[in-house]
Length: 345
Image (cartoon, helix red, strand yellow):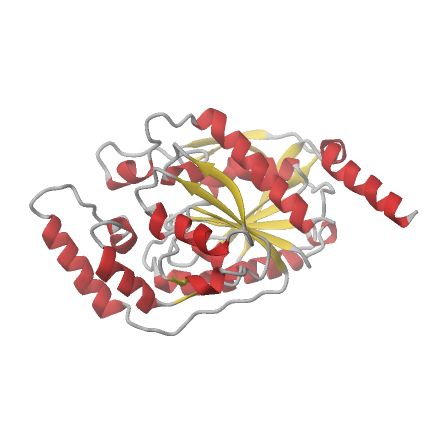
């Protein structure tokens, strides 16, 4: 009889989840660890309204009363210099499946403050994710709807580094330095960030020399960073920054780990990052989706406007042949189903 009841519960969860969920998405912003704000999206029965956030035309029910969802939280860790608004489409899909979605702004590496990207932010991010869970746990309206013993983490790019860290990956500054000493010409953006790029011109040699000099001065610590929060029980890393990881630490992830790669990513070259992780952890991790025509900006939806001729445009714009409108809805559904499988029994 117990087995029969469990079977009925599984059938209900995966065949009929929409019937039990609110149809609208609410948004509230709560104080976070550094005095900033964490955006939290959640199911609600309240009507949505159009919202303008910078260049983005979005929709949600601001500070609406929450409705009961599936009782689980997913934390999204944004990329370097990122904002919550470029993950609203993913958040909506997760909310439609009943999740509450929290998006902290990582200190020193968000769209309002880009003063400390790279390893300084990498080292803080897992703890900031944990503090975000703490913030939700103390929220008087959201906490009663949630059980926080099984939390999911999704991250892209630098946020993918966060996802790998919370899954048990160990990294060091010296490994980043070693990677850039050996492969800077092939994987330049992973070493230089968004400040400049190689163009094939006469200045490329100077750029490579300058970046190597800076990294050698700034990042030589060989201490391994290890992070663990028992509440985090599933993670997805999309186009992750991963060349600074000890790959052996990802051979057996401590939690279910999903990967999303983009074959035409020119920001984090796949063979040094997502494909290197995949080669290490399969079959003990899961390929959520391979975007064979996708680029680094495929993790952003909606995609922000990109200034013509800028480094951002070259690194984040969709490659020719990538059908964003067809691919990303399917990707968001696969991400949601991964978390449904691993966070809900």
